[in-house]
Image (cartoon, rainbow, N blue to C red):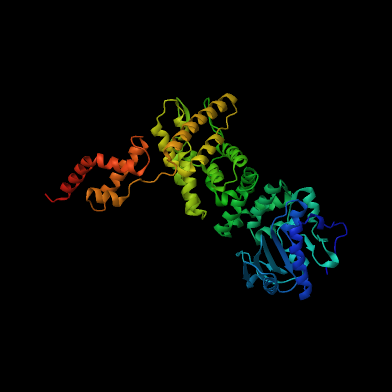
Length: 488
């Protein structure tokens, strides 16, 4: 049994009743099997930070795989996944995600992220972990229940609100470069400072991130963006040099340019302002990504006009293409890419519809193009107002209220956001006695335009009657197509 630091307090009173019952079951099983088991890492840290969750990691001073199998046999589990190479097992029990790890040491080769794994005692296992705040272990044995093993003074760093590595940070980050992004995630999640030597090591070792798979980088990036202060995370990623490794396009948005009496705001910091405002309104990852990418193309589209100053014509169109390419490179799923690129493409559209004489047709088309992303689009548009002039802000917000009121009224009547073609291709082919081909699409498109223009309501019967009413005109188009097919 390891020695306990005398100043480390017991924290049993901070463990929820339901969680304590689960831990007691694990302690009972450990006693039956005559092995030592400790809670380690994030769960212990979060007990002190007063927001411990349902993910609990355990170090087993024996074979963790066999222990996990014994747990499942005795208490049941919805799943059990074994990783023999790393001596790790993961299972779900009720609402909990449990991970059992054989106490191990890790030795890394310079050109690889995959370590050579060996057996270790508890202190050896704690030593390999990323940050001091994650190196604490809690005893669950009856003889020492709740006492903390804290060889690297993680509790002191929690109290001081510091993120630092237990060993030489250059070695820690070179071994597993993703830990550099984890340092930033923890700093932003808990509002901690990264200890100066640790941050300096990140800057010196940032290039090592290139050996990490894109999937792991994106997963960690998503956690930063999904946190409670993603804008600070982006700033730290930038100043550390990490952002340039996996998202160099965003670096190019930095800088305020002056020309004669004209200047444009720094797109980098404007974007972070927008991201802050979105964060206060929504925890949706895809909307936060849309905020991050909405002006990504401004550096590419920036032009200077002597009469009007700086312009960024078409940055929403170029931005859509850039967003899709970046997110594809970062291995985002296709449905998320489509959603974010749509919002980026449309983020200027609502401001063009603020005139009181704007047609219902224009509003319908916006609803049609945005679809289920309409509400997120409007949220982004409001957050995009970062002027320091209160009158300008008030005017823009009132304009968006006009657009939103019109859109809500039309959506209530026409249900355009969930729009789908009211007549099928088969119905069109049967009615006009034509084969599959471009003409079917043209006729269907004509019906959709009639709905969007408000000529007919958005329902099947009205659309079908519209086809019947205009059948002669469509027949003429069909006859013309048939004549064009005949050889001269």
